[in-house]
Image (tube, rainbow, N blue to C red; front, side, top):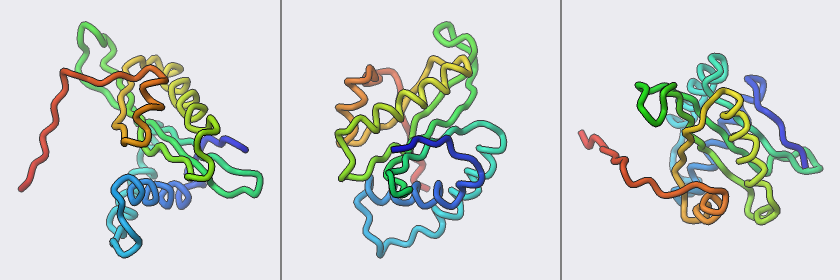
Amino acid sequence: MKFKKASLSDLEILVSTRVNVLRSANQLDLSVDMKEVEKSSRLYYQEALASDNHTAFLVYNADDNVIGAGAVSYYQVMPTYHNPSGKKAYIMNMYVAPEHRRKGIATKLLDLLIADSKERGIDHITLEATQIGRKLYENYGFCQMQDEMQYYNKD
């Protein structure tokens, strides 16, 4: 098994992986049109990788097939008492193929993503957990946030 830091040369693999993650997390079958998501994801990766605001890792098996992925996006908010730099990281796009789960792959991906964040001086790292991943993240040390809220504009 090989862990590789992704670059722009991996663009199509990243886009494909992103779509697969979204299909899996949202239980979307192949009949659901994801062309707009593919297009937007491609643009996102082009901009975010070029500006170094995103790090992604791909996991390959011995046959060079992608069996997992994980990513972290970096952003800036106003400084606070608890976060004087205002720098934050958001882990996303975590996925391991079902037949390769429970082998430490997701934990290794988290190790790599958190190490990348720490190298940038970022200690505030958040993520959105699916039911499948929640136990992994809790065991790793992530905890439920109580102070944040989210608003979805329905218009």
